[in-house]
Length: 155
Picture 1 (spheres, rainbow, N blue to C red):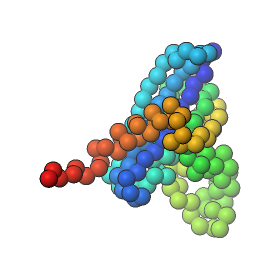
Picture 2 (tube, one colour; picture 1 turned 180 degrees about the horizontal axis):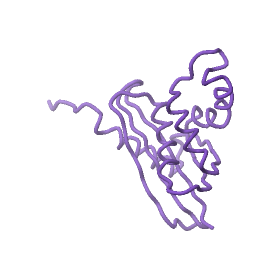
Picture 3 (cartoon, rainbow, N blue to C red; picture 1 turned 120 degrees about the vertical axis):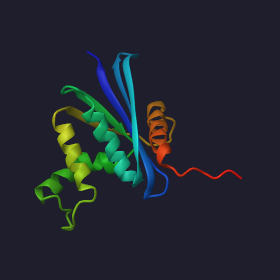
């Protein structure tokens, strides 16, 4: 049975500023990559955390049927949020422990819904540390951001 992985990353030029998200989806059996799909997108005015969330959301929403998947992210914000903080937020009516509204609540709710139909294992990796799949997700995130970056004037 093939294993399914989603390598996700977000990028932002300025925070806030133009940003992008990228996903590398892979079905692997043993050492063999059976299928691979790349996704990316972006926004003109966003934050890095929003792009990290959108990468994970798009990875899960693109799956056509409920799946067992490992989502690999270099975002401690996403990993800690989805495996820990979210339970308290939901219990507190989407408020933090300090009774403040959760930032990016609409994306957290969307991620919560997206992961509910899958059997998801969340894994954190250090970003920009030579992890090839994470580096590819970063390239895709930067490609997703590119259409939203202002064009530089030629001298």
